[in-house]
Length: 302
Image (cartoon, rainbow, N blue to C red; front, side):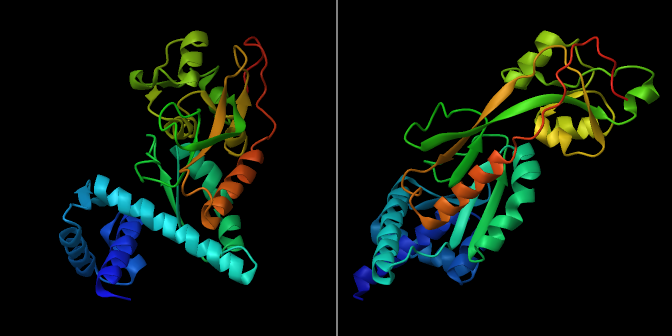
C-alpha cells in the first residue's frame, strides 16, 4: 500500500475507533495501542487532512464535522468489505465488533441487562456497550448505534425507526408497607422538570399531590422498594420484583410506545442487525400480565 493511501486508511480506522469507543482507553484498546499512540496518530491525521478531526468533550473523544465525514466513509468501506467477504464465502459476515445501545435507565437495567447473556452467548465475538441514559443520545451525531426509546423520535428524522411494542403501566407498592402504615400509602410523583411525561401527567390528573418526587422511573422503583409510597411502573418490571405487589389504580393506566432507532448507514451491518433483533425479541417478552386495573374503591394490597 502506498504511503498516502496507507495514511488515509489509518485515519479512517482511527476515526472509526474514536466514534465507537469515545473514551481514550477504549479507543486505544480497540486499536491495540496505548493512549499516547492514539493521540499521536490523531495529530498526524489532522496535519495530513488540514482539519481538526476529533475533540475532547466531557472526558471523551468525539469526531468533529470533518471527522464525522471520515467516519461515514470508513463505515461505507466496512460494509463493502463485509459484502465482498459474504460474496466470496457464500455466507453472511460474522457478527463481531462493538455495538453501542442506549435506553433510559429502567429499561437498560431491568429489561436489557437481564437478557444480555442470551445475546452474548449467541455472538461471542460481539462487544456490547450499554448506555443507561435518561437523555436521548444522538444517533446521527455518533453518540450511540441503537436506541430503545419510549416515543417515536421527534428529531433525527433521517434515523431508521420502527415501533417494536407497547409498555403498559401498573401500580405497585412494597409488600406489607401499607399494612404497617395502617392504610394506603400516597403515590410517588415526578419532579417538575418531568411533568411532560405521560405517566407524570396521569399521576397529576388522578392522584393527590405526592410527598415524594423523583426524576426518573428507576428512582421511582427504588422509592417503592424503600416503602415510600405507591409507584406507577412498567407492569412487567413491577411484576418481576418479588418485594412489590400490585395495587388498584384510580383510572386506566397509561401506555408508552417502544421504538427501536438505528443509524441508517449502520443498520445493514451484521452486528447491528443482530443486536436490533435481540432487542425486538426482548421487548416482545414484556407482554406479561398487567397489574390489576381495579377501581379506586377496591381494598388496598398489603
